Image (tube, rainbow, N blue to C red; front, top):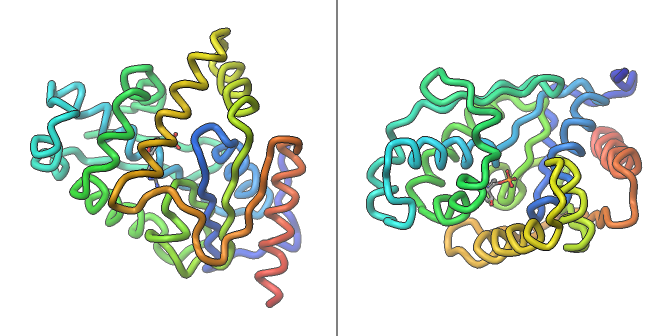
Length: 229
Ligand code: DC
């Protein structure tokens, strides 16, 4: 059972959690939001939802001009309750479908298209609104909300990330998962628009040898300190 920390900062607080694929951003961000009574936004799910829609529409995800031209069409909505986050495209719940292999393989190139980023940036800033939220992604502390009171860059060794992600998905092929994670890191870090980077002022947390609870504790401590400052 989760409890809301009685010393929780709230109101306008924004906690930005960026990092590589599979470094534990989602479980960590949800856990922090629950502990502090904050909302939670998974921006990766928004890029996945856009990718799912493009694939369903039969748009060639490697054709940058076609992706750019279509980026304004789907209506993507995110529910920000950390206990039950939701994501819909034109009213359809896609929370399971966006985790499929085809989406994993296509989401990084789609995310590199500036028109996709511009469209989702607008939705992300609207969702953050007055704050009181933990936001996870790749460019939250650097581009989406550089004024965030707490910025975390979460990483873990590729081996640890692949093992966790494979277990989460109930699979067995750790090597294949690792290859997919590293390929996404390569594209996410190398793109021209808003690449994955450690934002100015971010605290680096390496979760390789930490439990989920330990990572959450560290971020809650950073938030408590930020509120007192
Ligand atoms: O966090 P995730 O694995 O669900 O993210 C899926 C993809 O979305 C990731 O490979 C890169 C992209 N992404 C991004 O470019 N910017 C963000 N703020 C979040 C995700």
